[in-house]
Image 1: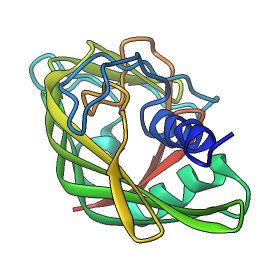
Image 2: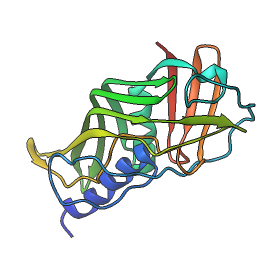
Image 3: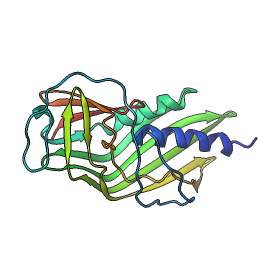
Image 4: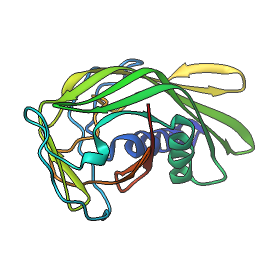
Length: 205
């Protein structure tokens, strides 16, 4: 078995960590948007409150948040195992208002691991935005419409100093809330979204 074969599994694991789970897409260095579902673990209870327009949800989530991309990458690397480490660059912003919007500004998740004695780096870069037209928060779970938008994903692997593109999972950049399964907790200027795979740590913008 060549080193590349297991690495594709690692790539899939880290991509699924970001989205929860995904659908297959043709191999390409940049994938267009597609629907992604997210499973989640239980959250902390919170009563729903009325929001403006079509939004309802926990008041503590209202506003704009910055995702800690570095911690997100570390959480994704933990799924890969085998001593893998993760680091993140760029920015991911979440806004909870009448709509829930997630924006990626050259956000990159970089995972380093070792296979057969070789150091391998997998880098995934996200750009674009996705918006849900309605959302709500109740009993520690987010629910609402599946977001629409365009987020491109570029994935590459670097081994022995050589960079090569990798196939990516179709990803529209959303944290899909349509299944009422994305857990949340929030308090003051911090919040956590839990997809059941990784935790997205948020800090108020």
